[in-house]
Amino acid sequence: MLPDVRTLVGLGVLVFSLSTYAQAAQLAPPQTVGALQLVHALRGKEALQAIDRLHGKGLAGTDGYVAHYERNGLVAMLYVSRPARSSMTGAQVEKMANGIRSGKTPFTHLKSSERNGTTVYSALGEGQIHYFYRRSADVIWIAADPPVAKEVLASLLQRDP
Image (cartoon, rainbow, N blue to C red):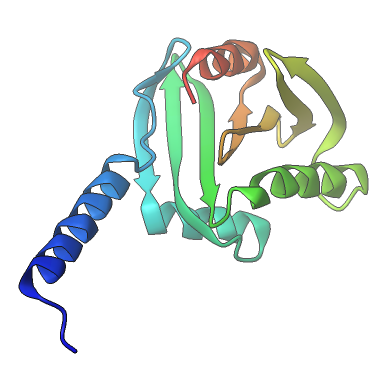
């Protein structure tokens, strides 16, 4: 038995609507973080490949961006990835924290704190302060020069998920 034309048209409209919604929900970097301005960004597959290179393996992300911010010679980088399954988000954040704890990374002085109901980890490394945390289904990593690190973090934590 073949499906009728109304069923096929209905399925086509549904698929189109879902793909339009998925495109609208793509991650996009903010134009500013604190007083720093967006200079350039990688998005989508290109950003996920850059994030995977940092980890030395694929993290099975579905969307993300890497954004570079500057002002008066001060720099912050923002790495955001959305895992394929939202249940993986917390596990990825914990895996990063455990890697730092074990000394297998260039980062030291791992600390955690609660900020507006979000567990935020911080670490030192490569001349910057690093923060990482989970926001909804996304994993966020901030690498910022010390004079602007707290401002950048506060700016990002105030944004809607």
